[in-house]
Amino acid sequence: MTLLAFRTPASAPAIDADSGTLAGAAPGPAPIAAPAPRLTSTVAKEYVHRACHAEVFLTGSEQLNDTTFAVTAQWPRAHTFFSTPDGTGHDPLQAAETIRQAGIYLAHTRFGIPLDHKFMMWNLDYTTLPNQLLIGAAPTDLTLEVQLLAQPRRIRTTVDFTLETVVRRGPHLAATGCARFTTIPDSTYQRLRRGRHDAGLPSASAVTSEPLPPARVGRLRPCDVVLTPADAPGSWHLTPDFWHPILFDHANDHIPGMVLLEAARQAANALSSPVTVTPTAAATTFHQYAEHDAPTMITARQTPGEDQDALTTTVTGHQHGQPIFTTVLTGHPDHR
Image 1: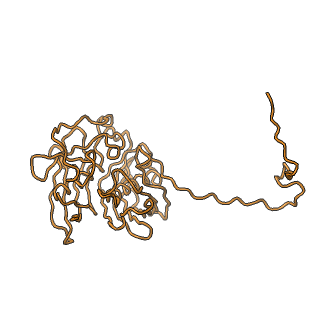
Image 2: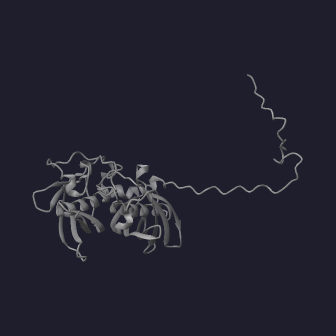
Image 3: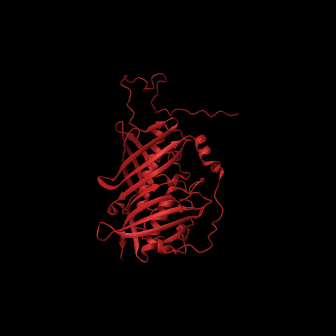
């Protein structure tokens, strides 16, 4: 084996091996290293219950006091699902998803909820300001002020908490929201669900008719449509694509709440078609799990909103005649 010897050039100053200073130089204070720059990345996807890194919108958090937290987030300029049909704005549902992620993230990182615990979301309300959802020349950076309405209520291994959220884009208010969650250990969840935790993606729907045209529900791509016509006016079958990479980011034993919110928005548009309605606000109550193996009927009715140009749409979902969720949306028709 040949050893390569690296020689110091004759003109180079010698370095004292013990002190690390130039040989013969007067001793002085050690140089102070410049602080490392603060870099930005998304939080761990496990903290927001997402399988894909690209679907994580949160970038960090800071506790301000016993009940208030500052959470940072970023929305990409282009998203295959959370964008308006004309591509100029962020979808208001992205605010709802960000509020949902903030609740789960804080539960794991600030409230001590283990990662294997399951979450039940009972309510998710949001109100957005459309002017602050316009897509700019850079990704949209957001600051969320999240406040506990009360200290998490703990009953044995179950934790129940409600969070109010204010979303700002720079100094401007962009959205507000409120969500209530209950967390339970996985073992309790398995008993509650009676083996449904083993269910993977469900089989194809028994509904054989074609889904609604994308334009009728405010969508561009057929794969994003989750409604199929039913016999009664103002009623549709819930028929999402269970392989949809965003609505079904990971296998689950029930239909996720965000799919139901999307169904409500599409029902509002189907009812007002050919006019598109942008749901700037929605208040949703989840009554029970939406099962994969049960037919789901979506019904909607519209009434004039408090604003002269607004429409209020009440959407309900039923399985076997029992309500699974109710959403009241407020939106403004796009007459362009």
